[in-house]
Each structure stands twice: as structure tokens, then as C-alpha cells.
Image 1 (tube, rainbow, N blue to C red):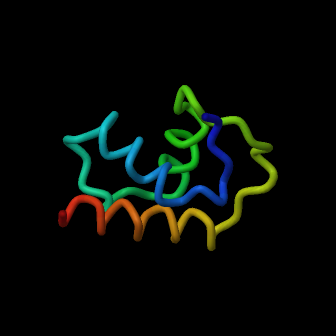
Image 2: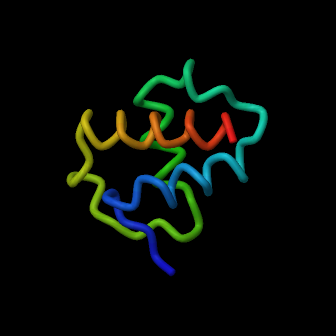
Image 3: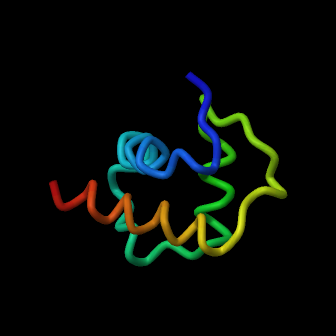
Length: 67
């Protein structure tokens, strides 16, 4: 399965699994973007990413941490 920027929940789950020690509330968007692009299953154009997408990923990740 390849991940695209719009797969915010799936990306959040992957980030939670690969970076369990990170509190997503304190992640800056520069790091978040790099971490997403570094995921094994991620295959999308880096230019298709904007602040709104990163914010959606961060919010989904915070919700994932709460579960």
C-alpha cells in the first residue's frame, strides 16, 4: 500500500508506530514533513504538501496517541 498526502490517518498511524517516543503536539512542520516523506510506504510528490495537510496529519497523530 502506498501512502499519499491525503492519507492523513494512515500516515498518523505509521508515524505513531515508527516514532512512539514523539509527542506530536510538539512536532514542527519541517520535521513532520521530512518524517512523512521518509516513511517506507510514502509515495507522493513533496510539492503536494501544504500547511493544512501537515496540520491534519498532526491532529490525526494526536488523536491516535490518545487511543
